[in-house]
Image 1: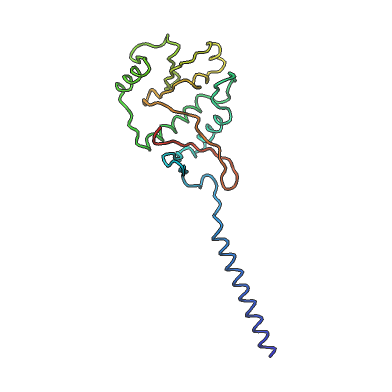
Image 2: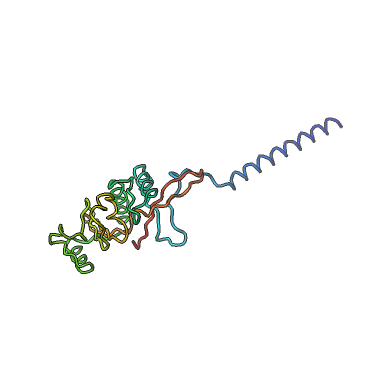
Length: 203
């Protein structure tokens, strides 16, 4: 009788242990696995699937550029001197170009590009524009400036020329740049901040 009771107790304990282990496994299966930001899949906006993350932006140099731009922002008022450089904007433009290519954008010929600039903005790029304060070249950027400030202000805040309502183009590769600062600071599953650069196929 005692032997039977002992065996019965051992059997119950074994079953309880099995149930506990099964419950633990089931709980682990239900809990989604936590991921660091560099492990996360590409973000696609659930409300507008034309908006997607440009994955190249997860590289360290682009993350740093986005951090600089997100923190300081392109100055559009107050004329505050920014800490970031033209290099940050060049890196962001690389991302923008990569995004356009990945979405099948057709880059126009130089002739078509110049024709459209003249047609829409009244600027003839085949002519010397060096004395036109509303047409500026900064590296490979062509900037049409509808709102002018004193030259002293541009010297104090060089990046001001990129701010709204200026119209910015990549002159070398011939496309309009909607925004170089459209990066979002977001948290991964471990609450670590990273920067996400998104583009739409409509950009």
